[in-house]
Amino acid sequence: MKTPLVLAVAVSVLLCAAGANAEPDGARDSQPTNLRGIEREAVEPGDTARDAANALLYLPRESLELLFTATGAVGGLIEDEQVVPRVKNLLNPPPGEISVFPTLFAETGSSFNVGARLLARERNLASTLRMGYGGDEAVVVDSRVRLALPEPVPLALTLESFADRQARSFGGLGQRPGSDDRNQFNPGAPDTTAFYLETRERFITSLGARALEDAELFLSSSLTRRRNEDSSSHRDRGLDDVFVAGSVPGAGDTTRLVYTEATVRVDTRPWRGGPATGFLFESYAGRSHDADAPDHRFWRVGGRLASFHEVVRPTNIVSPKLVLDTLSRVGDWEVPFTELTGQPEFRGFDTRRDDVSLVGSLDYRWGIWRYAAARIFIDGATVAPRVAALRLEHLRWAGGFGFDLFSNTTLLGSATVVGSPEGFRVLMRFGVASGFGDRQHR
Image 1 (cartoon, rainbow, N blue to C red):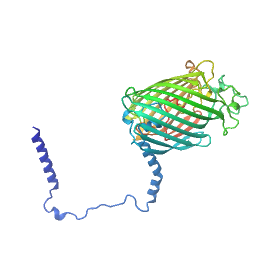
Image 2: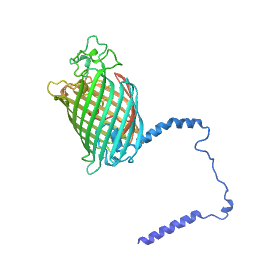
Image 3: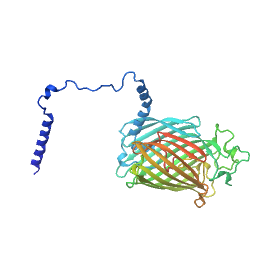
Image 4: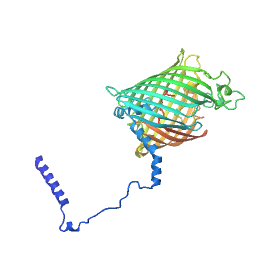
């Protein structure tokens, strides 16, 4: 039954082809001898404007090409978050490929930090090395090696080393440090915000597994050494200048802390780079102790909840998010001020410290083109000494807009403008992603 039908189709095709090639009588004699349009070279000699534009765009084009090809297992190394790349993107970059691209970090109130990142992969092994420099008080070196095994259960073993020197600030405890009795300010202090220079070295070992399609389990342990001293760029505003000497735990000390954490995370979004619908839940618990005095310890417990909903089009996403981080002290040991709970998810000025932090946000994000998206957002944040003491009457808020650059699996760069009652803040990041709920990298 099928043979006559096939023959009929073949004959029809042949007849159509013959008819298309057939020429009416006299057509050959009337054929024009030359049918040509206006010819123009792609680049004409002397086209200086086009040459100048190509020269200016050369570096961005090459950088973007390197960024988009360095995804998958290597992309997981770029992103400072506790995730295991999905199997389909696990081994994306060609084996043996080495990529180098520039990095840039800029933030209101600090100097530019520029540098470079090197990415390499060989089969299931990926590595990255990043170096950045922004002056004597803004130096960072970061190295990571990740072994990814896609079968029988996706696993990722990561080893990291990190060292940096950064000028930082501390304004005291509480949502309103100036009226919090726990802070002892010097009567003659020029301001209520102190500055210090922190030198930090950190080593992290982590193991992640994708137990289910959308669920990840993560175990990690780190050894972090911190040393804080007066900053030469903020004279007369050191910790002992602003606060009564001895009233800030850990001021002027060197600490060596071991922190071990277990995390479970459920993320139903099909990808994490661009706008996508889904649901995210994360919960963690970690224990930290002094490497020189194991009885000096505290716990970190917290979680985050976010949902991502389509508005009109699949690339238009509205996402509410709530983040709770807590620190529980054990015994009478005073936790160093550098380990107090901060608010990195708050996109305003992260200047509040305490034992408990609550941050809520609402984002509206929409795709501009394939690898870029824009967003508008508003954040609210508060801190307290315990969960029961959280209040909303002195809520700090910030709102703004920004643009994101991403690959299929990784947020690669962003530019954000934030406004709040404390002032405006401008942030630029290119070449590395910001973390989402990662205590080990704070």
